[in-house]
Image (cartoon, rainbow, N blue to C red):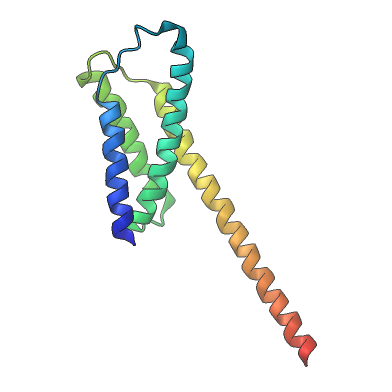
Length: 136
């Protein structure tokens, strides 16, 4: 199963790099600039939520700090690369913060899911105890 996630991670990270390292002209649509800029931040958040999930599943990284550090490095690399090597693009702290928000959202969702699973398993154990006691 991890091979599937590794392939999918490679596809997603390749798509992110392709979109980040190419120039796109929005000059002919200035009316939609705010909408494009807002969607850009939303795209960063969604992309890094997906990347965090895939990185964890593909390489079985249980340490959230390592997973977060790898993803922060990728986000910083993209922004620095755009600053020096992609004409018409620049380093954007807002984009990097959107990446951080995406990573944080994934870890919050994961933590909530783990707590819910833990509560459900405790509930099942408690019910099993009561059923066993009732049968005796």
